[in-house]
Length: 49
Image (cartoon, one colour):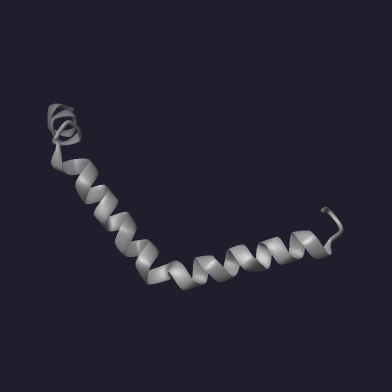
């Protein structure tokens, strides 16, 4: 438990998490963009708007 608390309090942890998140978004950004556009188009075409 102490090791997890020490690792969670490390100032480098948020930086590493943000870096990994940014790399994942950069790798899958086009997929997420088309998923969002498709979802919005479906929502609009369903008459919900």
